[in-house]
Length: 230
Image 1 (cartoon, rainbow, N blue to C red):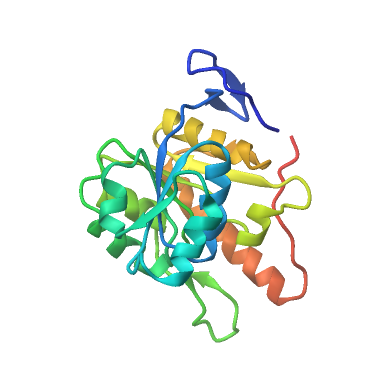
Image 2 (tube, rainbow, N blue to C red; image 1 turned 45 degrees about the vertical axis):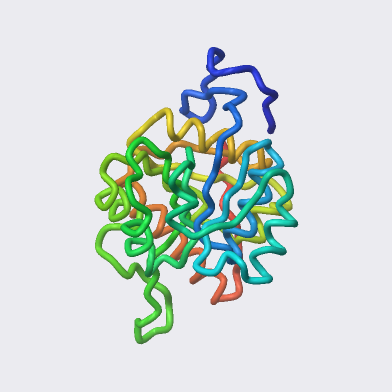
């Protein structure tokens, strides 16, 4: 379900969110150029946003190919430089380095930080995945950047499903800032996915647990995607 631009003055209630159709074009820093960054960056660019990829090696051939595929005014620079002028920072990096990367990005006060990461352990004797931390990456990131508006999203599905859902797919959102969640919900809906507000950032622990059982179901030969029937 997509919404046409109507300005911030119009507000609808969608899935428990204060919905602001037509969020103005933003500068979005996508930190990381792997599978998740390569999925979300082009999708957000199609919605009219300016994408700046933050890379440890922005001149690398694969990064420049991603910039070209993204189109618009997309560009690539260092991770910290990408975040400086961004309205939204997407932390598309491996979960075990998320805290380290967020610390390196400088002052994120007032910015929306979209966190699709998971901290997963595969060390159990039975071979199944489990939580690697007692809290969650979402909570840890919010603690590292207390004045940022962290929204947990896009952590419960495969990057391929982000691009081609193949049917209705729900994207749960967790965060302490309702307006930030409304902006992320607009991005989600613009991709043909369904946003759902599930509460404050502490709910990230549950969302990361959803990815744990998603992984484990696949290992038993029963893959699925999440869709919450209203």
